Amino acid sequence: MAESSVAGTANQESRSSLPGDGALLDLRVVALGGGTGLPTVLRGLRAGLFESHPWDLERDQTRLTAIATVADDGGSSGKLRATYHLPSPGDIRNCLLRWPRRSMLSDVFAFRFAGGSEVAGHSLGNLILTALTELEGDFSKAVARVGRLLSIRGLVLPATGQNVALHAELSDGTVIEGESRIATARSPIRKVRLSPPRRWRCPRRSRRSSGPPDRPRAGQPLLEPYRRAAAARDRRGHHRSRARVVHS
Image (cartoon, rainbow, N blue to C red; front, side, top):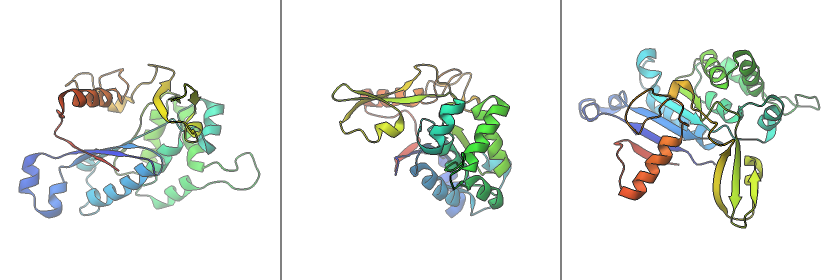
């Protein structure tokens, strides 16, 4: 299971004044990851945050946000990326399917073709995300559109809307390209980077034109603030943020 990180905030007043499940009403959670780990975390968070009270679109839509990796280059996602040059749709699709309110549509998106045809092995959800990316001209807009179709409770964002590849430098100096190949590497990994460098941008929904240094600003890579925050933590030995971070 891939590792996922969860950051949550709730103001002190809400914790002390709301009894029991009511204390969750002001909780905001952001989960980062991919693979099978992030969708599993989302399913548990969805149950804890939303199933104990009636859904309120204005209050609840932004209470749970998933930021999913888009560097996978294996299986159905890898074939689609090689042809259409888009971010990986697979991990995004898995997250979208963890909290829809329209179960019939979720079954359609989860359908995977079998047999020996050209579409064999492809998930219909991946094909729909690819088609919408072509129509919208933007992967992030395609993800948002699918979210509306499925009436999901929360937000799903790609870590970047750009077509990026994962590179790993091993301890013996070998450089491997592609998440699927990195997973089979036999030497320890020295460092990891995205390619092309500095081209990746965060989705518009997650940008900020201004704000404290620990928030993404326009044009910054989405994960850059987290990298800087981690570096600052190592230097100072503490976090500025009051949010709790959980690794699973």
